[in-house]
Structure formats: C-alpha cells, structure tokens
Image 1 (spheres, rainbow, N blue to C red):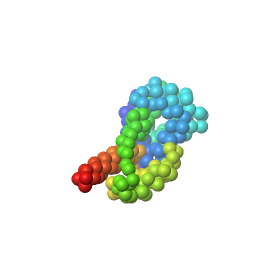
Image 2 (cartoon, rainbow, N blue to C red):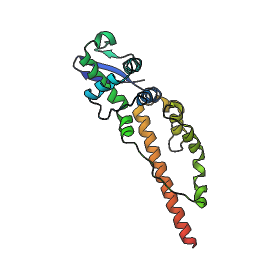
Image 3 (spheres, rainbow, N blue to C red):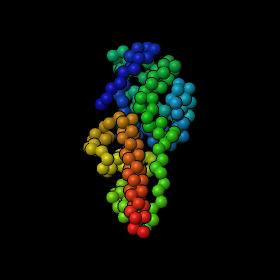
Length: 201
C-alpha cells in the first residue's frame, strides 16, 4: 500500500493511494454519473459532490480517506470534516492524486488512428487476435477486462498482481503507452506491407 502526505490548513494529512483495481472501480462508477471534472479545482469538486447520489458521495469520501491520518492521528471523517471547506480542501488534493492522470486521458482520450486494411493484409493482424477478443469483451464498467487489456499485451513485463496493485495513475499511463506503441507498430506494418506490395508490381 502506497501512502502520500499532504500539507493542509489543519496539518499533515496522510492517505493511501488507490491501486488500479480500487481506482478503476470508483472511477467507472463516477463516470456513470456524468463525471465532468477536468482541472480538479475546489469548485469542480464541490459541484461533483452535489451531483452525486448520497450513497456514491459517501463511498467516494470513505474510499479516499480509508485509514487516513491527520497529524499522526486517525482521521475522523464525521468530526474532522465537519468543516466543509476543509473537506473540499482535502478532497481536492486526494482526488487529484488518485484520478488526475486518469481524467486527463478521459477528458482528452487517446484515440487510435483508423487504419484501413484490405483482405491481403489481414494476416498481419493475426498476432493481435487475442487482444482484439479481450477488447471486444471489455466494457467501461468492467474493471477486470480493463486490466486484462493491459495484462495480455506483450509490451510489458508486469505480473497480474503488480498491475492490480500499482497506482491508478501508473496503470493508466502504462495502458495509454501500450496503446500508442501498438498503434505505431500497426502503422509501421501497414507501411511495410504497402512498400512490399508496390515492389511486386
């Protein structure tokens, strides 16, 4: 479990950083409720809290501040966050730490280039069959499928345990990096095929 300390107006706040599984589970639930946080400012966090149903709002706060400490003492959510401004201050810091990278790619997602392959080049994609099947099964709220889409790629050497336990930010950067490299590989193969095809004429 990774811990992060933040200076606040009421002292040092120590919180755990969500791992990929915890972070994705919560992030996908937030996305189902039209999450529209981009720069993660106090105003946006306030608007987010008011837009969430009570159950999800409580889950967000309880998850982000589970086992948290304030000035080396266990954080009491009801007592310490009775000051609403302090809640927003802490929530903004912790939300940015856990979801900043994820949201930067959700708001401006990486989009794979569209490559048009004809029947002759279809065999070049055979190596991606497994990943394609995984991608076709993945849904936005399926955390396991999202992690699988990275796990079954040949472009990393992480174990399943290390993937699920790395921070959401690190996991999402790895995921996006793999997508970029796979797209670059596909484009290179396509160009090489076109060169070979033109040389045969």
